[in-house]
Length: 240
Image 1 (tube, rainbow, N blue to C red):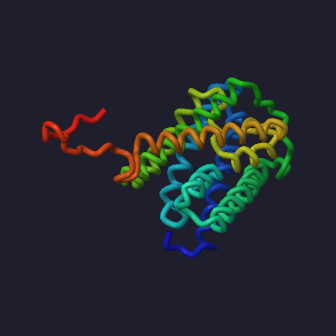
Image 2 (image 1 turned 180 degrees about the vertical axis):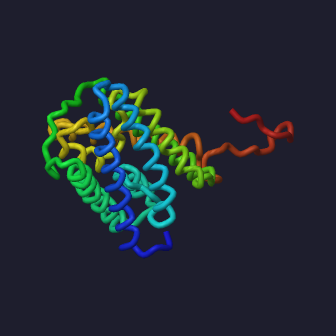
């Protein structure tokens, strides 16, 4: 990244905050417009997809548009980011999420922070978080390793939007967003008691997604078997 670190931190704060404001605000708006849960979820998903695409396009050139502690964590684990910078990114993301939920609630005349009572727990829901987060990290990894990062504003939101509907957890896939959503007693909220397990399985999913990236898109020269000459037949040795 060529932008100064403070600017990158602000971009992560702003991006995560606006993402959470979109998730929470569109959920509130959906419940005001319809009593049909499917319609509310559709409004929530469409708004999230649209905003996430714009935010990645707008802030990606500045900070890389992580907006997610597990995305930053994978970069730290791969030693692609200094520890101090990674910690600052994660702090900015969590603070942004707290600001985003307060903004969304305030826009609808609700208390800025109000503890959620929306219970989200159990094995099937946690499995949904593993799938959603693993898929997210694999999409990001594929884009990065193939040099197609310019498609991020389209493909990353596409995965999140799809996962809203095919995962049992409705695809939180983000510890900062999860923490923020615990402080809104609205459609998109999650009870604080359920947050730790969500984060645990998000980390598990991120690790799976990162490992799949390494296997499917190995770094140049790191994983493919060499096509060496056969010492007997002096021809190419069959791989596998």
